[in-house]
Image 1: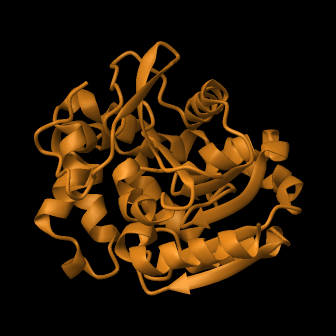
Image 2: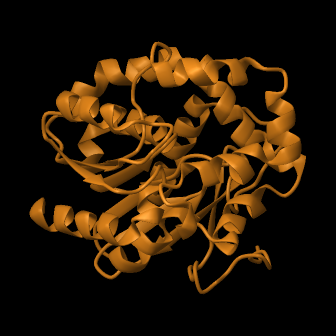
Length: 289
């Protein structure tokens, strides 16, 4: 498939690859050689989030960054189950198809539960973990969730997401710690993968999963100690308005082989603080051979 004309190839200079997952075309980046670093995105994002990390780490590692079905340059079917559990199943199949072994897994946002569920079920195949601004437990009793619950339950939510591209156009700017760093051209790379209402079902489903998947998130938390032997780096943008740093502290306490790095950035720490995040990853990889 040809890359879309809106994509800035100087920002995202990677070859496109596709894998057939559940009968759908999943796009992914596969750059460099060496030990595998698998980068899992959230919403409303895609492998573009990790472009600066990939540019650096691919000099020493094989960096693989898939776009979930319904996101980025992957297929966006209308008749599809866009649940977090389904995305985790897709990730399992993707890893199997590519024969990936001894994985350093990097997760962010919804990529957290999607990727860590795989890690728990296949801990033997995970060498290291890197966790960026996410959650791995039920948040239904958290004040941040209760503030958002009214909107999540509103009949206006599907309209906002499908017809106004709410997640990319409005939520992303709110996610930046320093909005001056988010240029119009940069924001366009969040918005443009979702050009039609039918392209936005994946982002809508992720929002709705905050209502429907809380019990599943809690099952991940209940099993998380399985990963205690795995070296884990937690990198957190402290200016995140949606996922507070107390979540990072809770993760650090639960994962006994983890360290926490706090950065002055918002939710998309790997993008807004790309240099610091990438340097932390490089140091982590070299310190945990």
